[in-house]
Picture 1 (cartoon, rainbow, N blue to C red):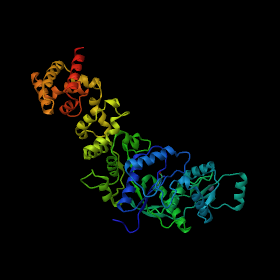
Picture 2: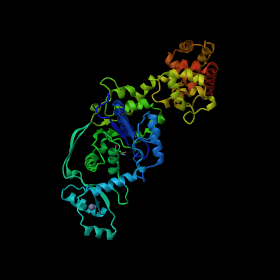
Picture 3: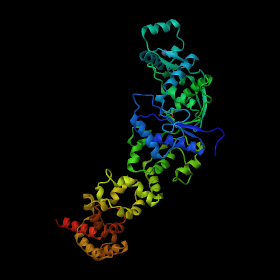
Picture 4: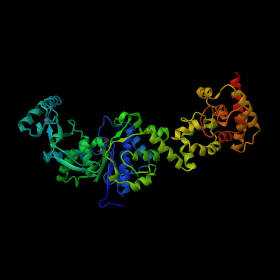
Length: 492
Ligand code: GLU
Ligand code: ZN
């Protein structure tokens, strides 16, 4: 379904800190839009802030993108016609464009000090006037300029905003108008010569021929500035066309506050460590501002790509709901074939996630229990507590579970159960169930009550996978030995 002009989108994070879910949602919407339209996904690294950017964070970004399953047509490691794709390697380009903007009268040197700006801002506020930059340095006479320079005053480069309203049609929010008093002239190059986001982001969008800018609503206020800058770049022959802009709705976290990067719930690594599947997480994140259909919210990434239209992106804030994310992830776990599930769990079956020794892991037991576990875990990290009874020498000691299950008479029941389990046919869970059922009957207990002490004796926990399948996989000897150990503990 290719549209008339080739679609070129970009994902352009700054490598600061850990990737967060808001960033992943932005990457996802760009990627899905590109793939749906047979377009080009450009991955650009906005690392012009040496004080905040780190190589570690850059590596993490790439690793996260790969883990999520995103590919990109241009960018780090794959290259492309507009290389390099790391802004730290494009400084000459920005310097050149800044000079062109100065020469063309679209930008000027501003010599105002922070203190002077503060004083004027306060005065404007007190007078109830717009408090943004007042345009003082738009006109600086040669004499003034000489005086400033003799004083050794530093200057920044400011972009000159046109004195007219800027209107554009946001792909998500519809037509928006910004009046000049709300969009003052703004800095594009620091006093030390370092170009700012305000310059490098639209310059690269222009040079990389981006057609659609899809990003979070927090960046909406930079759009009128960028449109004005774009117009200047077109005049200078640097840009061809203003891209379309679409701003994705805010994501709200706890207490209906905007989910912040610093929110622990926002960290992508948290979801990886807990064992979300990439497809489960992306399915959930796609619903933050978009919907697949009125009656279906579980789908594959391919299904999402096939259906993804910007017209269906909603402008209303989206609520981040961890429970829903988990439940969607659980559905994706159920959708795996059992072999893929067993493989996906592999990292959790080893240290540091697993609390058993590597040599105690039994692949045959794992293969036998995996299908039972697959229908019960929400995130892959749940797996360790569900299967540790198979690989630990002794079941975990969980006092709360023990106290809950071991009541007066539990010893008598366990003795009977041990006897009947000892005599049972261990080739099917049915006969093990009948053994515990019969033991319960002797003590006037229904199956549920009778199996609780058996489960805690054998697995250490009150809840877990289907008990009789678990016993069968653990085996007769180990099961009986654990019941004996529990009886000894009860007698002590
Ligand atoms: N590097 C910017 C950020 O991380 C990109 C913003 C944009 O998409 O324009 O916020
Ligand atoms: Zn100034």
